[in-house]
Length: 252
Image: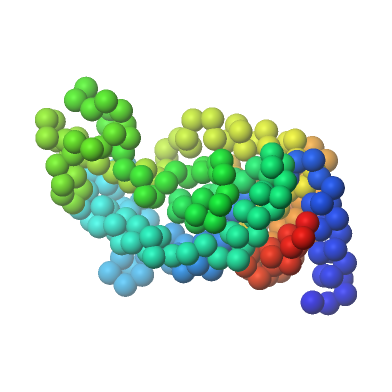
C-alpha cells in the first residue's frame, strides 16, 4: 500500500468510526470472490452462445422454460456451494458493532451477506434461491407459495399449468416494491457511502452514489478496476472486497 492509499484508508476509517449512518452498495464483484460468476461470466460452456435475453427475461422463459430453468438450477447450485468471503464477514462485523448504523444494499441475488450475518439486506434484484409463480393464479394463495407445484423443469401448477420461475428480477421487470425508495433514502441520509465490487453500469442502483454525494456524504468506491461512477467518489480504492474491506473495517 502506497502512502496516498494509506492516508485514504486512514481517513475512511475515521469517517466510518464517527458516522451516524453508513450506506453500502455491493455488486457482482463481491460475490465473484466467493466463486459465484457474474451474470456474463455464467454464460460459459453450454450457455456461451445464448443471448442474455433468452436467460433473463420473461419472454425468454416463456419461449423455452426448461432451458432457462436449467440455467438457473446450475447457478443455484453454485450459490449453495459458495461461502461468504472476508468482505462479507467484515461488513457483518461492522453492523454487529454498530447496531442501526449500516444499511446494506446489494445488486446480488445470492444469500452470502445473510449467511455472513448481515441483517435486513435490501436486495434490489431479488433472490435466486426463491421460487415464485410466473403469473398470479386463483389456484395459488400467493406468488411465493409454490408448495403445491408438480415437480418438473420447471415445476407447474396441477390445476392450470402456471409455471414456477426463479425469484430474480429479469430484464424489463420492476424492482421489488419499495426497495429502491428505501435504498435512496439510506443513500440520502448517510454520512459515508461505500460502493463495493460493482461496475456502476446497472441502473438505477448506480445512481445511489450520486444521491449520497449530492446530499453531502463521503463516497468511497472499492473496486479492482475503474467503474462508470468513479467521478462520484471522493476516493477510489483499487482492490477486491475481501482484500480491502477487512483492513478498512477492522476495529472500527
